[in-house]
Image (cartoon, rainbow, N blue to C red):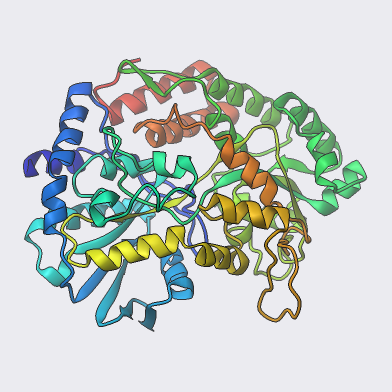
Length: 487
C-alpha cells in the first residue's frame, strides 16, 4: 500500500501557476495540477478502496498526546483566520503559537514553482516514520488539486475525527463535494465558499452608462453577446471591459456541459470554444488584453488610471487582492460595485484536511468544527474580513439584513455593507450564485487542461499562431503532461 501511495504522489506532473488561493493577506498564487487519479477506472477504484480500507486503522492511530500541532499551508490566510477567530489560540511569533499546552507550528511554503505541494508531498511520504513532533497534523488544499490528496489515505475521513453529517448540515454542498473521494468519503472542510460576481468601476459606469446601479449595469452584461457589445461601447470611451481575456475564462469554464476528459480522450467543451471566439473578437477590437492573472499589467486596472471597467471574482478577490488597502486604488475609495454578470461561477477556496497519523486528533476536530461550523465565528469572519463563509443560514441572515453588525470603531448596529463596494450589500448575489453551482463536470485533469489551454490560446489571441496551431499545441502539451490521454 505504501508503494502505491508513493506512486500516486510522485506520478503527479507538476507545473507552476498563479490562480489565487482565496482570502486574506495571501499572495494569490495557486499551485500545480492535480495528480492523475483518473488514469484508469481500475487504478482509481483500487487506490480509493485501499484508502477507505485503511480508515479504521487511521482512526485507531489518531491520538491526543501530541506536544506539537504541525500545520502546512502556502500563505498566511488560514493562520490569520485562526489567530483572529479561534478562541483557544495564542500567538507566540510569526510561525508559532499555542493551543493549551500544545505548541502550534506553521509550516508556510509559498506556491511559487509548486514549492508548497513539493514540500507537502515529500513530508507526507515520510509521515509514517516521522517522529511524533514532526508529523503533519493539518494541511490545506485548494479545489484545483484537492483530488490529488483526497483520493489517498494521507487524508483522514472527517468522520474518523467524530464529525457528523449533522455537524455539517449548514455548509454549502459544493464545498463538501470538492473534497469527497471517489467512494463518497468526506476528507476535508472549508470555512469559506467562493461564488463569483462581476465587479465594476462605479465612476466608469456613471461616465459611460449614466448610472452605477447594479440592476441597470446587469442589463449591459446579462449574457456574453451583450457583454461583447458593451465592450465596444467602453472601448469607444477609452476603457477595456476587463483587463485580460483571462478574467472571463473561469466563468466560461465553470459553465461547461462536459468534462475535459471523456473515456480517456481530451474533450474541449463548446463553452470553452465560445470563450476562444469571444476573446479573440475582443482582443482584435482592442477591447481587452492578454495579460496573465496577477501580473503587473493585469493589476493596473485596480487604479483609475488603468482604464479597466470590470474584474470577475469572488469576495476574496475584491476584498484582499485588488489593492483595497492602498491609497489611490478604486477599492480604497469604495469605488467598485457588484453585479451578477453573464454567468454564475466559483473561484478558489481553501480546505482543511486532517493528516493520517496526527497525534492531536481532538484539537484537529475542534479547529475544523469551530472554524467551519460555529455560527458566531462564521459571522465574525464576515464582519471583520468581508469573507463569504461556508454557512448558509449565516449568509442568508446577513444578506437579508436580519443579522445586524457593528465593526470596530462603530457605535451603532446596522445591516452588512461592503465599504469597498461603496456601501452595497452584495451577499444576496453570492447566495444566489452558490446555490446554483454545478460541479458535475469537474475532474482531476481540470487544472492541467485549463492552464495549458489558456497558455496555448494566448498565441492565437496575439496573432502568433492560427487557432488550429494553438489547439494542436494544447493537445500535445496535455498529452505530454498526461501520457495516458489521447486526442
